[in-house]
Length: 300
Ligand SMILES: C[S@@+](CC[C@H](N)C(=O)[O-])C[C@H]1O[C@@H](n2cnc3c(N)ncnc32)[C@H](O)[C@@H]1O
Picture (spheres, protein in one colour):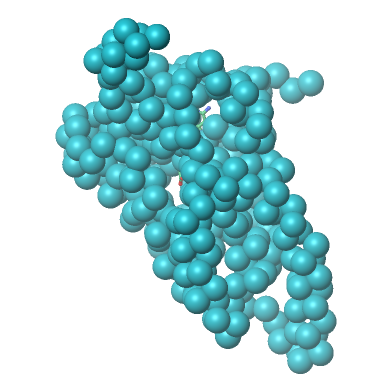
């Protein structure tokens, strides 16, 4: 079995040496996991903005745990009402890059999300996006505990990571395979070379370095059970479908923009269903204020 320290070391080296290398201006290797096509832009932008709905708009310290380089402009919006955005990451390169975007508004700390070097109740706003899934599963709950510990009473955190085995991706897996096969045949017959990303990322980069690293995803049932007695959470939708689904089913010529507008509308109507059954949940952690806690106790 691979030791936990080895997993983290591998993840850190991957991001330092591959993930946060700029492949073109302002675009990192890691963006291969995002759909940057114009047809999906509006949907993706609106999903990014969902993160800030659950966080206090202003305060003194805002924590971004596993910040990366703050690779999308929407990320800067989350902390704009705060005095300081604390970017914490195990990758030094991530923080160097983050500094270029956040400037004096930022404080940059090399840290492990499962062992945060901050005092309890320091932050009025916390986000952790696509990071906990890089930890060995034994440490996922510890990471949630840490985010909860550093959160100020009366405040909330937004946490995003993909589910491992959710209903919607399972239902879409066969149609996705058939559609990709069909598209492949049509393209071959017409002699068209695909200009868009293939649905499946390749596994080695041009210079023979790995293009991905350790990921361990949870299921909604597992997470709810693990956190039930530790902290109040609510699971709502961040994005119902994955980048592979977008690249397969959403195309400009197929009315992709309108399909995504409809999907976004559906997700807004049924946020809990899409949160648990879709690809990417937004886990909202709420920490009660001392007065709420007191009132609740006196009513027990
Ligand atoms: C997929 S990237 C996401 C970055 C950013 N949150 C975003 O959404 O663009 C994962 C980030 O988590 C960081 N990371 C991985 N394991 C970590 C850990 N144990 N503690 C802190 N950061 C970690 C990586 O270095 C990387 O920058």
